[in-house]
Image (cartoon, rainbow, N blue to C red; front, side, top):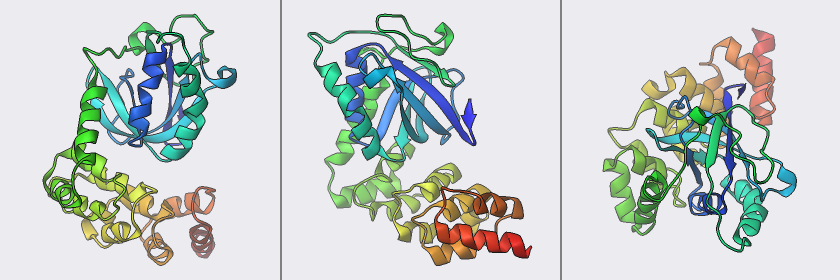
Length: 277
């Protein structure tokens, strides 16, 4: 089911309307998919395996991200770590789906693990208890999209105010705003949770100054998961990340020393500490 700390989630779109609905969410760096069973934890890292009759060769398209919104019984929003790459991969699928003579309505199935795609015309491959269908009458995606659109229409000053005083859903959207200075105001929100700070600490589109702010907060860097996320994030300034290595347990330092997803300078520093220990 999982690759390291990242869980695999298979999503099979059988209707063109359902797969095309993801275009608007991708514009905001997210996917919104039906609720899997069991529901994931907030901020869980997932690898979403997307299949549909319009995928080239039927192969799954994989996108990595974190669960940033859970709507009980309806679906989950996954903020992608590289939305631009996901858009590029899905562009041919969207083009083929739009080429349908008429949009086809079909169930969207979800299941934990990697599920082989169903043949064209077949029913959902996921077990019935793991599947959920998005319909216009029962679709949280529309609500999420409305919030995205409302925030997108705001001025920079309005976004700053919302970042400081808004709820979690607004904070998670504003963290991904094109204006990276908004992230600093999100950190000032008194209701921000440790899980949200952990997400920002590992967010590869975070502004380096925002990561500096997190690194300078004793309470936040006292959390092992936030500390590890900062060290592993390539946007964290190298001197800061190297200094934070001193606070990590040796087991985590050794994992970083073997990682191919951490900046080279941090890997080298981690290896030196592991050898000297």
